[in-house]
Length: 153
View 1 (cartoon, one colour):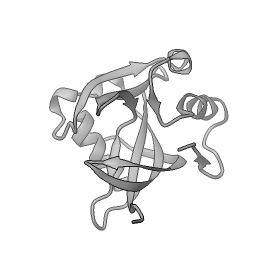
View 2 (cartoon, rainbow, N blue to C red):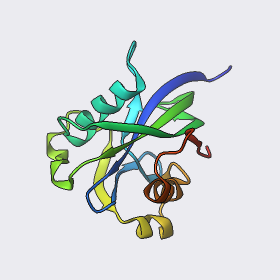
View 3 (cartoon, helix red, strand yellow):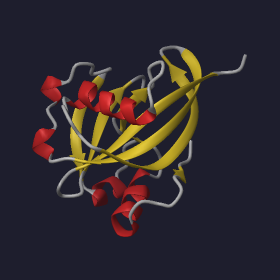
View 4 (cartoon, rainbow, N blue to C red):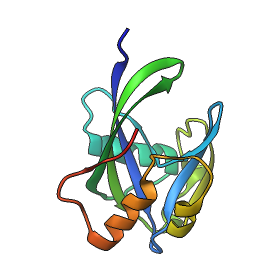
């Protein structure tokens, strides 16, 4: 049986010091990931990104920046094998505007943490998506890519 396709929006949240916000999950194994989730019926990727930031980070308003990357990964979601097709957007916020206590849907988030780029580059912890540190470094030095970068599954 072929896996169902699930479209998702992900948000690379950078603060005023170029730190990236990652969320920690424990779903059989511990990992860190950028905020985001599946699109609702009729929703655009950008609209889903805004909604997910409110639900997971308590952000009322955050201007969605350009799309930096895409990623396709087949994995389990609530016991179902899905082919998840993700679009990654950049967002700049002031760190004090992120209010996890005001999040409305924490989706098994165990922790929220700002990471320095160097720390992210050298961590031995599992971080999704693979290649996130390099993508951020490239964005900070070269700006938005002409075409979204394809990240490894």
